[in-house]
Length: 203
Image (cartoon, rainbow, N blue to C red; front, side, top):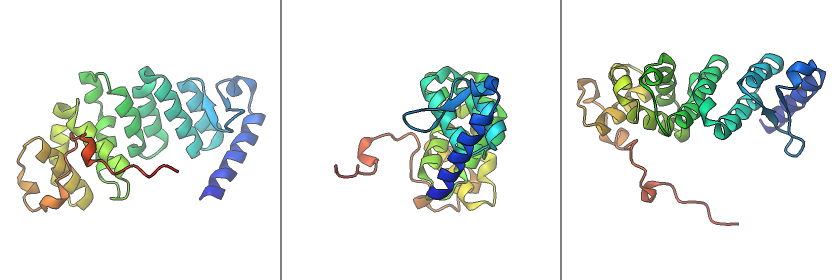
């Protein structure tokens, strides 16, 4: 996997050097880190157009959104166009840190990203936790109906995680009755440091 990513990055750099000056101005390669950087959301569009949606373009978008949170909501929607919907979750999380408008919460892309995040394998705890946190957070009222519908699905992971969010809101749904409490006992609103995994020992 590492070798593949390196190969893709080398290809990206080659394509970037060959790109027209106008596009090259929108994104480039950081001389110190060797990573792709974008200067605007348009830079991300150029990156995925020129470099075939490689992971490095998505990472560059994440770095941009972290530095420019006002761009985060539109960054999420752009990520969702080119990558699996759950990859938009970190961008929505950044966008909603301070506030989330009704229009944003009601955007169908938010529910799509959340439901895909709730469907992720158990090993992808980061995406699952992001999806649960977003679902139970500022957009709860807009997402409630979609989560109830998700609780009635036959997809085991989505069902269990949707039921966990509903349970955290003290909402009883018949479709969740058969779910084991062990699968729904992780409260997405719980940010108690005592419940977080222990940090690795210092080197």
